[in-house]
Image 1 (cartoon, rainbow, N blue to C red):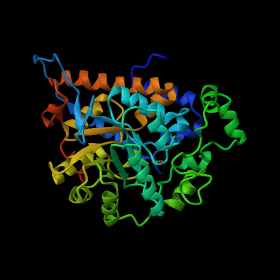
Image 2 (cartoon, rainbow, N blue to C red):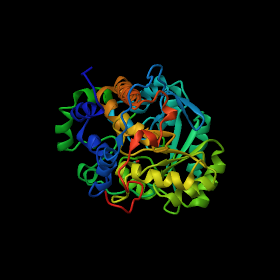
Image 3 (spheres, helix red, strand yellow):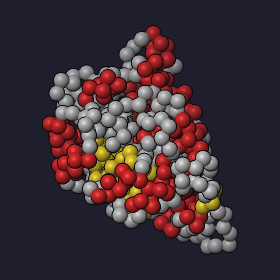
Image 4 (spheres, rainbow, N blue to C red):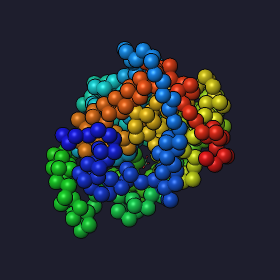
Length: 389
Ligand code: GLV
């Protein structure tokens, strides 16, 4: 394996190894990419307090997310098309997460199906649902996730229609890719990826094709989403889904205090403060800047996780110190997957863990659960999303 010291190193190798269409799918935000960019730059506005002469031996990053033990509070987020970033990508990523001791979340829009991932992994995983118009399909997929012993349902609330990512349209994003001359020219330089894909049968949306009525070919993601997703999703339907599922429920895509309060009122186990990695509402605030006002609104009423913009262990630390109990990473593990399959995801987790652990020590902390505002220097006005900083 190449020498990787950062997640950014992995992104560069990933870009060389994976077809442009799938790299662009991962590495885009919607429209002007303002939110996609600010998710990352807002983390950099927070500084850490350097403390010395405190015992830093015997540190621990162990914690819990929704009552489940985690080796560090970092779960793998649901990422559509993961099995197009690397052959059998969902299985590879779930295995790496399981070995590391962090949760893996399987997307509705995965290539490997729920059953397939369950069969080829040992640890229970979380299942992410997009609510479709076809409630028979929704009921069936929830039952499939229960049968596969998924230990939480992650309900995504911020993508009932897709924010436009210009490159996906220009590239003609599809799974598997349509072999246009431009795609063939690109694939010629991505032989490692191609060999992997030739060696697997998993090349379609495994949870959908053959399960949703009338969907026999789920090639065009955008068109298919526009046709199937329930635009009328509301809190009453979310309560109905909560009851249909009956297990641990995480509501993902909350980026406003009022919605966080609603999520807590309906009795979800956790929320993920998220703007979908800047892929949906362009112009939305970064999730790290929304976190303080969301924490103020919900207090201890509901567990809070955060995603969008995390690329380093220092970012994880900042989210935890601002009150999140856990975090999720999407792109950070996909870079590892594209660069090196299962071993690449393991490496990405090791990098984040080492950064979190050593940074914690240099902040004078030994226990990830003891992190708090006292570890941070936060610019004035950061908590108030109406102030420009
Ligand atoms: C799906 O979750 C996407 O952001 O493309």
